[in-house]
Length: 251
Image (tube, rainbow, N blue to C red):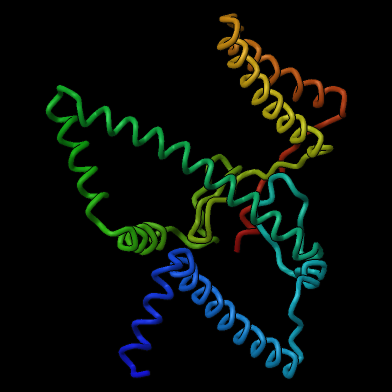
């Protein structure tokens, strides 16, 4: 049997089995990726064992030994665990992302509407704004805001004061910190309200499709969103206080 006949036999074999021809390359690719990943993971594990490096999640229960300045909903200091620090960081990320999305949406809508304005000056300014931020690379924008704007802010000892309750310096903007008592109950009531509203809106939509009956969705939603947190605030002995930053703490 020569090479040509062998090749022809292999081609006929795969041609008669189209599923095998389809799945075999994918299976080999997955096997190759898993093999490479396993090989490097094993080598990394061996090297870490030789150097006495612990690989796992047990460190999450250890003391973090560092502070986080902005901790609105979770009590945190350097004696708390890495897991608590991670939770605080996650909450802060969600807060910053939510604020950014909210204001970016408003700004985008305003600029978009202004771009279609019959007023020539407003439309032209909106067009210039759009063209600048659309055509300038994001990394270059970050460099501009950091070096041309943020780096020009004063040192902590010369921080700009806003009525002695907030301070702005090169280290950041320091604002009053929320101090909650039984705050988890209040936050839980807000989350519960959102979940209840979600299922109620689905129920209202289904009822309207089946029976045509309409419900005062806005009033019911507003009532739930106000009543549940208010009850938890009054009954659960929830209180809110503020800790104001001091200029001597910033340096």
